[in-house]
Length: 58
Image 1 (cartoon, rainbow, N blue to C red):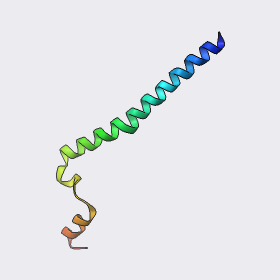
Image 2: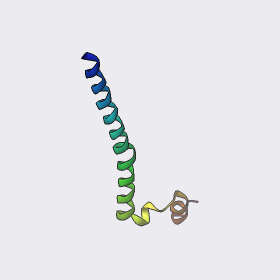
Image 3: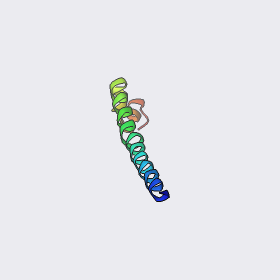
Image 4: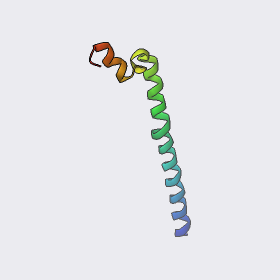
């Protein structure tokens, strides 16, 4: 009986770990990238070399 309970806890913890990994490691970064592309399209697509060239420091 105790072993069954422990197996259920391990299963729940494993599912929660995978769920949080997918949420925090994949969905959130992709959502933030998408939002930044929409809100700050020109700035989000610039690279540091273009920024420095425009300021005349490169």
